[in-house]
Image (cartoon, rainbow, N blue to C red; front, side, top):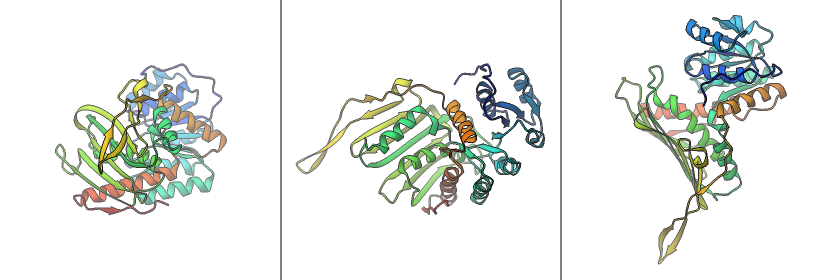
Length: 343
């Protein structure tokens, strides 16, 4: 992801106002500016507004959401503020008739997410959640391969999202890292898990988990496993899908040519015993592309055409439902939780 700020394209796209221009919001500012869609930036931090002023001359800057929502050239709002503020800001934007892109998680409570989904539906507005990896070219290709049956029946999916920092104080590692992996696994499974359990540990800050492991069981027999940590000696972002006809590895830490590999391994039976037969990895051709730019382009297209977002409010609610069950299991030291249907 480049840190440079591209020149704006002609302003023919729906106008977007970005709320929050800090650690992640600055990236949304950069991308929407580059797409010619940025009309306003809202932040309480003067330094963030000054940075936007220098990078995006002529863009309206303000410190309150009311000022941003009052502008007729802002048709949509992108919310990149702390998670606990998502519900109130997204609700205010929808009530003002603005489409909304909300960073993950959509909200912290399922009833609040349901309200936002219903509100967007009633008013005919686009509500989209920033589950970024759905727009990664390698994951898009993996999802297509699984849907086409290239791996056969998928039996097991596991993901690792590990790093040393950035350590949050307002949310634990589960809510910070795992939404991405939950979202991807639900997409590949095409279903919600029936039950799950989550365990973890808090070492740096009391009651804020630094490491969690989640196990999910699906009605089809598929099992999922998510390991997240911000106390890890090196960065790892890897998802592995194991099917009866092969295995696939999406490793975002690798160069583009190695981000998605297929392993056509086989299991043969010899004398009543299973014997693995290993094969060379096959590179899957994946065209490079910045996931955030693809996500923002998708949002603009949905706003312009009324198409349903790939990661719409309903998808965000499903992820939130799984997250809530994970947190309850974590609070109960790994007691298995039954997962209710999100909608």
